[in-house]
Length: 77
Image (cartoon, rainbow, N blue to C red; front, side, top):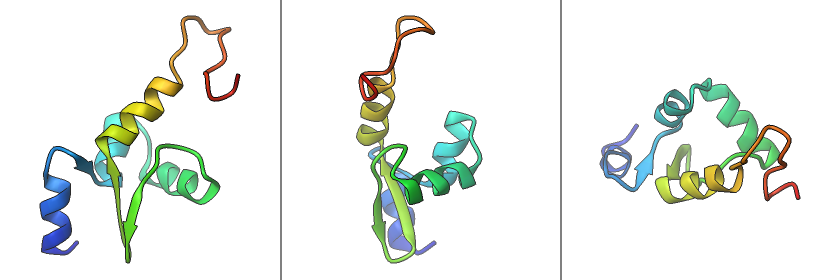
């Protein structure tokens, strides 16, 4: 990854797909598949560099919150 991308991803506002996958307990290929199908959190892409904003990830997770296993996330309701 380029020095510029490393600097952006190293800041508190952005995260690389491999790091996000590790935080969520997923494989990076899962995030890649979600990007292709329009699932998962919003992302930014410049050339071949993909980054997720921490804000977008938090919003995506909050939209999937449930009170019980029978609840449907707000995005599906």
